[in-house]
Image 1 (cartoon, rainbow, N blue to C red):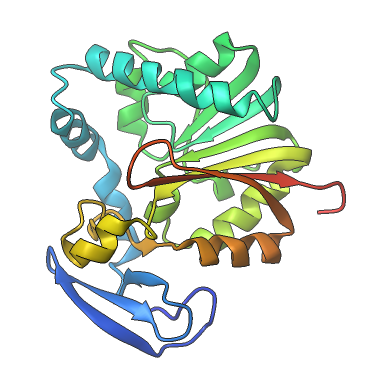
Image 2: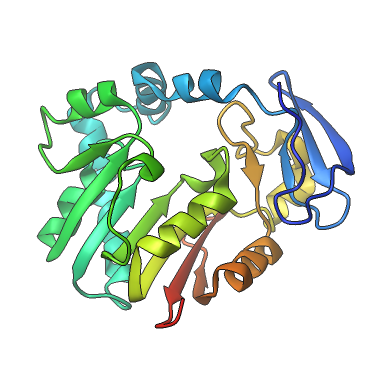
Length: 250
């Protein structure tokens, strides 16, 4: 299994925090970024996001069937889109890691020209039965989407799952139109519950969450990508949502 440096500091010096679910978590000795190290094999890791993972997420929310999960996610999309409309009331929208496409469907109803991206073909085939919206299958990097083509890009509970999140944000930045908005929804590592509970905190799930970001890391990422953080929201305890815009020269 590969050993990773910090994605911001490029150092391989880190503090070992301990193990959870069989995986070791470390903290960068310079910036404090927390991540799984060593990382799982990337091919093995991507197999975790098939239909089994999707059903496990459904049952953890006590939702008995596909339609119930769709309705649950559809209702959550309402509040998310109300916030996004403040910045971009219309245009092309790409929801990365769209799962059952509930957010995509609701965005279309809100007047956006929306489409999604999902890595599992099995999940797409399953959810299309209840929600036949436009969903691309695969990694964004492999889809050959034209640059500067989206007004809104959303990453709801996705960035912490990426194998190479920094590179993905640069890629998504290039897909944004000037003046576009990027929405990133992640666990809030600055939350008091993490300070108290450390690795026992419910959002520390190394089998699926590889990276754990504090606000200072998003400040650094915004500086590197030349995106501007317009707002940081905390819709529920333990969750951080960032709204970043792209200026005309980025």
